[in-house]
Image (tube, rainbow, N blue to C red; front, side, top):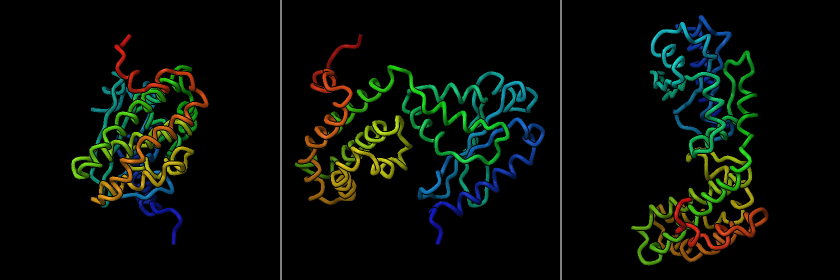
Length: 273
C-alpha cells in the first residue's frame, strides 16, 4: 500500500507532462522550459484533477506559435484545459518573470500560489527555476504579515458572528459554517507558514498549525454542521467567541496593542484612509 494517496495520479501526470514537452511546440525550446506539477501536492488526497505551471523566459517564447508567443511577449498568461485520458488537466503558461511577480503579490490568489510554489514537483526544470519560485514564495513585503493577518482576523470575526444563525435554525447557517471554517483555517495557516493553500487542502494543512490544533474540535463540528448535524451546529455556534479568543491570543504575541485585534468589530467600521 502506497504512503502517498496521490502517487498513482501523480505518476500519470508526470507521464502526461513529459509527453507534452516532447511535442509541438515545446520540444523546440525544451531546454528553456520549466514544467512544474502543482496539483495535487505529494501526500495529499487527490481526484483526477491536475494542475501544471509551465514557464519560459520571454526571449525564448517570442517565436512560439499562437497563443503562446504573442501572449507571453505581451506579458499575459495562457490557461488551457487540454484533453488527457483519465485526467482533468489545467495548464497555466506564463513567462518566468510573470510568475515571479505573481508570487511577490499579497492577493488571496497570490498567497495560495505562494503555498503551492513551495509544494511543487519539477517534471522538467533544467534551469532550476522551481527553487527560485519557492524562495520567492517565502519573501513577504515588510508590511504584509500584519496587513494580511489583520484582514484574515477581521474575516474570522465577521464569519464567526454569522454562526449565531446556527443556534436558531441550523439549515440557513450552513453557508456561515463553511465561511467560518475557511476563515479560521486561512488564518491558522498564514500565522504558521506565511501562506495558505487552496480550499481543497485548507483543512488538512490547518490541522497541523498552532491555532488549528487548538480549535480542531470546533472545526470538526462545523463539518458535521454542514452535513446536517443540528447538535454539532449548536456546539459550533456556542463556541464561536472562544475561537476568536484563541486566535487573538496567538496573534497577540506580535500585535497585542493593535486596535484591529482589541476591538475588531469597531475597527471594521472605520472609513478607508
